[in-house]
Length: 408
Image (tube, rainbow, N blue to C red; front, side, top):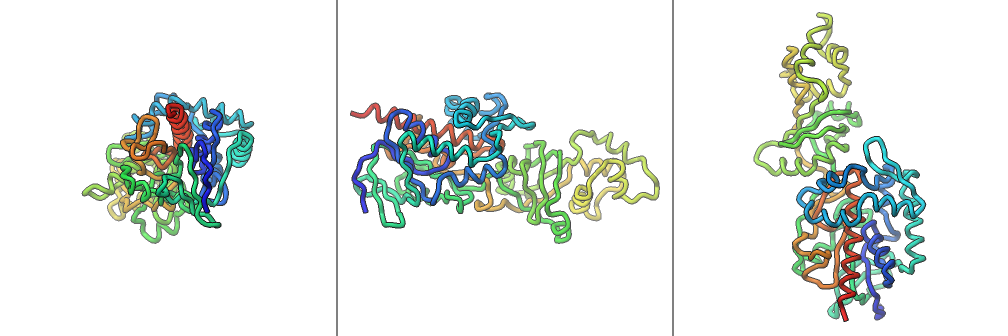
């Protein structure tokens, strides 16, 4: 089955980057069709909304732009061109006012993704954007047309330009599975291997600790691996640790796991107290108190924190106040791996920026632009993921608009 109609622009991918590209293109007066392999649009966007839909962050733009690691230089001008303030104004225009949470994160007041997505799709439909679900992009036909596998057979479209926004490789059941990488690799497009990002880390817990304390939180701790330290929270799981603090350390954990030495995370259970102050408090107490009682009464350590000390040090757990203070400030946890892409909030790797020009157009495929998580960048949770997805969607669309304007 073939569709010979020439579209102005085809957008492949119905997530945040693709829909934002479609909106930008339609606003420029272009005919736009969105192709999505799943039965409905924005499935990962809806999943993000289960946690309150953290759209972006309120920190200064200068600080914001540093959250993208090695991709900072490439993303810097794109986020400047579509800032967190622009994203908030966009949400407000859809009837979803935003607010700043206590952590500086920005959410819609409804704390849900579904009202925003419904309003967004409605506005796109009013702008003339066409939607084709259950269309799985399979590559290019010999005549250059886009080929799609559908329940009714193969469909071929012939746009004047294409925006790829097909996602990374995490949470494949929600749509993005990274299968597109083989298609682009065959075109000579440079790619970085996919790796899980914002994901839990595996630890070599004893069976007893894993059973008793799975689900217990470690609050207001400091986490260190290698040269990287940050404050945050973690959650003990049967397989290891997860939570915002662990997710933010994923690049450092990945690097440590790839090194020659065992990967060890050190947890400071009382980052606001100095070692000397901890030791002084531990000197007091009744002589008959057990070690657990001393830690609980004198330092307010929780059951999971006390158990973590015993898990880490075993029979070597110091009994002296000074030794205990040292242990509390640096509880070692040996990490054995990261959870897989199927459990990751996002993925690292993908299409390298060196394969794109400044307009996000593939150098190997003129007229084809790329956006969203399929690009080789990663960021912590906190609004940085969605902001970059939206910003690259806008940038790729503007690139396509300019490229089309240059053509006869």
